[in-house]
Length: 395
Length: 180
Figure: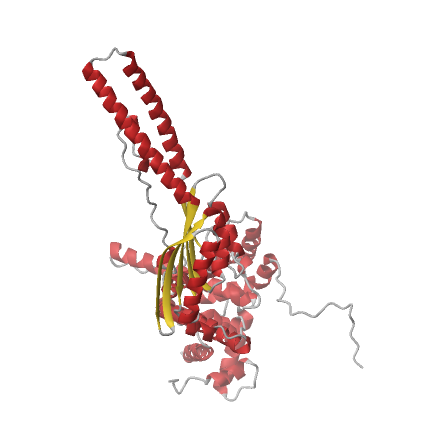
C-alpha cells in the first residue's frame, strides 16, 4: 500500500518522460532527476584503460559446460531413461517361452570301459555344437526365408540333427483336420513318416501336434509345403552337429582295434602265463564290446542325421480375433492407426506419470531457490545501504 | 500488376548483428560504471567492480544473445551479480571480524565523493543500496521500466514502486536538508 506522500508510479513515469510538473513537489522531483542525470560522473581514464586492456590479455578458457547445455543434456537423459522404462513396462519383457533355446543335450552312448585310462573318456564330454534359430513370423507364404535359414544348418557332408517346430493357425476345426491330413500325406510323399500325432477338436476350436520325420534332404521342401497349410504364428529351427562326435568315436574305434591287434599278437606268441593270458583275453573282450557300443552310437547318430524331426503344431486360437484384425481397406488402416495411437498414448501417459513428479519437484526446487536468492539479495542490498562500507582494496 | 524480381534474395528475419566486445565495452563503460557507483556509493570499489564486470562479460561474450536483451541490460545484470558477490563476501568478512575481534571500532573516515553536489550525495548516502540501484537504472541510465525490471529480476510494477519510494525518500531528505 503506497503511503499518501508517495508519488503515483504512473505519474512518476510521466514526469520522467518530460511532462510539465504540477506543483512544487513535482518540480523538485524533476529537478532531482535532471541533476542525477547530468551530474553522474563518467568512467575515469584509468578504468577505461583497464577495460581496453582486457581484450588484449590472453583469454582463460572455461572448461565447464554452459548451464543451459547441461540442463538440456540432463533433460535428454531423463527422457531416455523414461523411454527405456516405458519399453520395459509396456514391452512385457518381449520374449515368449519359445524364445528360450532348448538346453544342449549330450548324446551319451554310455561309458565304455576299454581298460586304458585315456580310453575310458565318455563320449558325452565331446563338444556338441548346437544352434537354435527363432524365426518368428519371418517365413513368407512362399517359404523362401525358411529355405535360406535351414540351408546353413545342415551342411552337406556333415551329420547334423535338425529339429524344427512350426506352429500354424487355422480358421476352424474342420480346416485343422484337413491340414493335419494334408501334412501327413506331404510327409509320406517326401519319403518321411509320422512318428506321432495328436489331434483334438471341440466344436470350431481345435489343436493338433504332429511329430514328423523327414529325410534331411527334403526338409526345406517340407517346411515350404507345410507352411502353406495355414498362417504361421511361430517357428523354431534347432540344429546340432553330430559329426564331431562321430569322428571322435571313429578315432577311438581305430585306437581300440590297434590295441586289440596287439593283444591278439601277445596271445598268439605263447609267452604268457595262464593268469596273464586270462587277463589279456578279458581286456580284449571288453575292448571288443566297447567297439561295438561305439559303432552302435555312430549308427544311431547317422540315422538321426538322416532324417529331421519336424514338429507341426496346428491350432485355431485367436483365429476369430485375427479375422477381425485382418480386414483390409480403410477400416483396417483406421484400426492400425488407432492401435498405433493407443500405443503412443500409453507411452505418453507413462512418461507423464513418471516425469510429472520429477518436473514438479524441479519446479518447486527452482521456485524455492529463486525466492531464497531474492531474499538474500534484498537483505544484502538493505544491509549495504545507508552505512555504505568504506572501500576495501580488491585483489 | 504485381511484379516479382526472381533474382532478388528472399527476405529473411535476421538476428540483430553482434558487435565486437571492444565496441560494446567502449559504448557502455560509462553506464556500467555509473550504475555500480550508485549501487556501492564508493568510487574505488565501483571501478574495481566495473573492471571485473567487463572481464566476466568478455569471457561470456560468446554466449550473449542480442535477441534476448540489449547489451546495456546484459552488462548491468553481470555488474549486479558481481556487486552482489562482493557484498556477500564483504558481509561474511565483517561477520568473521566481529566474531574474532569483538566490536570493531568505527573509523571516522570521510566518505569518498561520488561526483554529485554535496547535498545530493548526502541524501543519496541515506538510501539503501537497493534504492540507489533503482535510481541508477531508471534515472541515471534512463532504462525503461521493463529493462530495469529485468536487471533487478522483479516485475515491472514492483520496479516502478521501488523507484517511486526511492525518489520520494530522496526528495524528502533533500527537502529536509534544505530546511535545516
